[in-house]
Length: 353
Image (cartoon, rainbow, N blue to C red; front, side, top):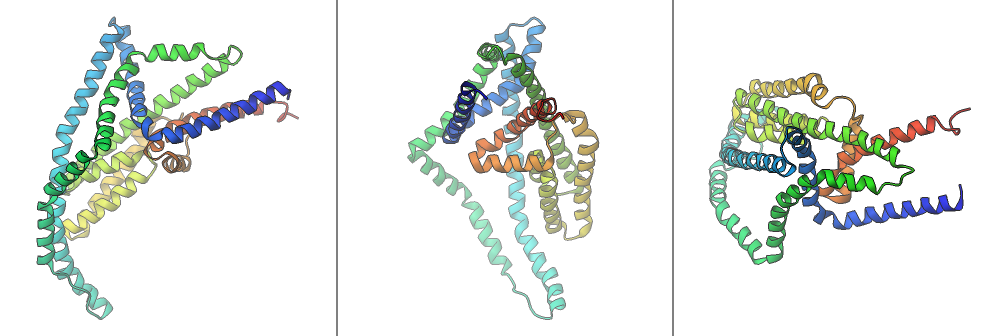
């Protein structure tokens, strides 16, 4: 390797390390921009279709941005009341479940172990729960008052809330221009290779993000409807939670199955409904493996489940919530680059005899 090539390699390594350290320092600030970029990336194909249909870029952006805003607002208006209702049901079920545990389960355990178990004053516990539940409003008021006194915290949250739609709009409007500007800056010698890798990464990311988000929504719907048919009061909360964390392989079904099993047992005090909840998640897994993932995601991503779990945990450990958001897209891009390096190695003199 020549001196100039070695110097260039060391410069690129130093630049990469400096960029990683800068991302680590700016991770809290970059989170709203990353969310905005994700929304713009997901909406750009729809805007391109409207452009091909004859609409201007600005008109297409306004239509897509307005649709995304309305859908998000409707989701909040519909989902938040349902979530609040089921949280109330959860609190109301706790004393009844403890009452059943003390009157039905505790005597059986005492018979098995041959000694009395610790009893709980159900009425006192019920009164405490009700009292604390009534104080939730005042506690929330105190929290909001504390936030209000801290102008910096309040300003930060308001900035985040305002930045995401504003930045999303401008990124979506100028997406094609930004991509073209980046393409013009590529070194002419490596431009074809970089563009080919960029197209492959774009295909992987598009297939993963749009497909995986659709799979998550479908699983959340399947779990919620299934648990509702079983009769579980917390069907919405558990179904949405299981669907939300299903981007990590098997995490959604494990979390949902444990939560639904415990909730069903405490609500109905029998194993029949627990089996029904387990059947719901079993059906969801079958549909995900045989229908949803092959149809919506495909097998082009090439991320092993262990790699997905490691990427999410490593991203969260290094960069917090920002790292969790960016972990899988970065991992998918790394897979594409590693495939390229593997092909280069197999065709090199170092590998050939």
